[in-house]
Image 1 (cartoon, one colour):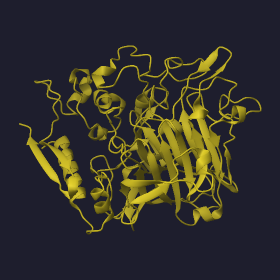
Image 2 (cartoon, one colour; image 1 turned 135 degrees about the vertical axis):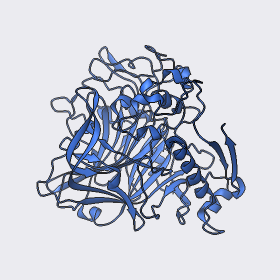
Image 3 (cartoon, one colour; image 1 turned 60 degrees about the vertical axis):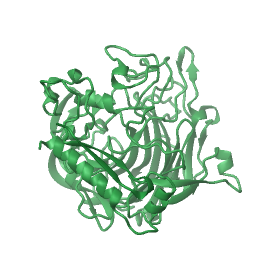
Image 4 (spheres, one colour; image 1 turned 30 degrees about the vertical axis):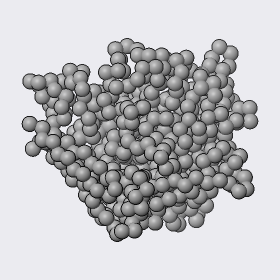
Length: 515
């Protein structure tokens, strides 16, 4: 059995094991299943986390007395109780993959390596250490992959092309790395649209961070370095025929970015930074905080708009962002207590409506659709941008980079970021789980463009689907991905296909042998 077949078999066994594992008649999973909630992604160890209550009305309603709350149910979780989990691409963890990558797009000092991510004591641990290491990355100057030698090693864990979701309340319990009297570490938890793979520049170009469904402004802007939206509302451009990839015409597609947690620091201060990255860009001279910042709220006690000067800032008007992305960002000042123990970070995302960021249950920041209306200045304009609708995946990482913040010369290593749990809740009957949902499919685009998603020698194991038009797959990837040259078939090169059903607590396993 070749590598791909082994990987598929292990994934199936993992899925079956998750579904059949029970923790008692009154377990959280049992209760949810009996209520018709999909539980395949729920960790059996999530015993006391079945339900949360969040206000999902408009901001004024949610901040008034007698606030109505909606009950939301657990649809995904990881409690990290299993020790010594391995997250390499060939380790077939059902939820996560650890990167083996030099992250060049933010000029990181460290390389990401799978062995920097581990589980022990009921926690996920991402450790950054000072040691010589190397990893492949994308050279931004030559547009070619290259091996980089670095002085530091750390970890990045992602659910790309494994688990994605569209809307809901995401919560993590995190112990920040380092001490409150040091600075320079860059822990982050963020979400990215599945059409782009973080750090793989060929996959992000033309997709990140577009959340746009207008023709006007989608083909590039004079004031932006974006190449234009690859799959825009205008229809297909160049040689692209999106229907070949099961993608509907006339709908703008992209890879939005939501930053749940980033820590930026300097001598004597630490800020929690929470952002929506957005393209296309506002015209020069405009700011997302103009005109009283409609659609923007900062209810957090120590929270305000980020005030750093991006490339399109005016002389006295800070506008965070670059020529690739508007960074609609809030900063909350942290204290030494925030580094002593675990804190809960929450993100409530209602597609096309709003995004809300929380710290320990306190609402800090909101962006809603009013903040993204069409804007113009003179002859320059941008249409309405959208609170994301794409399926997003989860990324957790610990980095260090001069491009993000100054670095304490006395910073000590190793340092560890710990995650106690990751939990996702959605409203009953509004479940939207998966990286390639029918309304916003991604699987065929990824399968037919493997050259955009493969840098390292094990990256092909995450491609997932088979391209239904295999002739478009570059020859160099055909053997690697298991295509049959004599038949040209797009049938998966696996021993069986497994269909799982957990209805009424019963697991149904149907195996079909592919001859």
